[in-house]
Image (cartoon, rainbow, N blue to C red):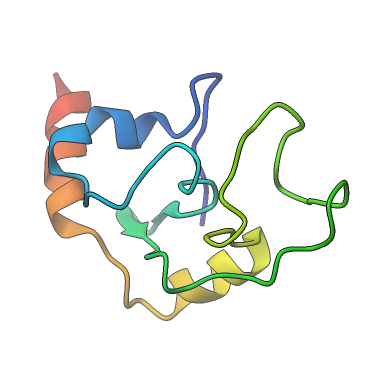
Length: 101
């Protein structure tokens, strides 16, 4: 499984902005989009981790803003993806079409 980011953040989410669920924001999308076996997985906000104390936030860059109530660690995100429940087929179609051209 891989997570794909660039300096703008989760760029695959930007490519599919028109079909994203309304709950996806830059503040809550960290560790929520994954690629596994050629399939995109988008982990919903209902799946989250207990946020560590301030200044001990792993997986969150210093300049990032985030929603502590929606935070998910890489470890918990990987566990969620492995269940296979969160495949985002509509998102996949849009992303693959956009990057193919």
